[in-house]
Picture 1 (tube, rainbow, N blue to C red):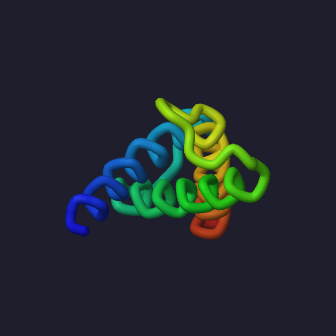
Picture 2: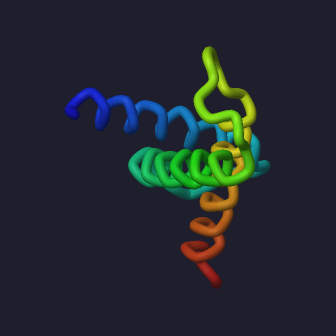
Length: 88
């Protein structure tokens, strides 16, 4: 159980960082928000992949699941930055 949580945090951090890299410009958010949005994006990506795929688990790296997770995290990051942007 402990290692599942640690693995999820690490995976979320990687997905969050990759999502921020595909978005042009600077996002004003810290690493904690990056990890949280990465975890949320990964969970959404896995859920979407499970809905559209009938293959189940695959051996090796599931690239489509990663791409969908990064895209979901990027959308969440864009939403977060648009909600927290200073409107001065």
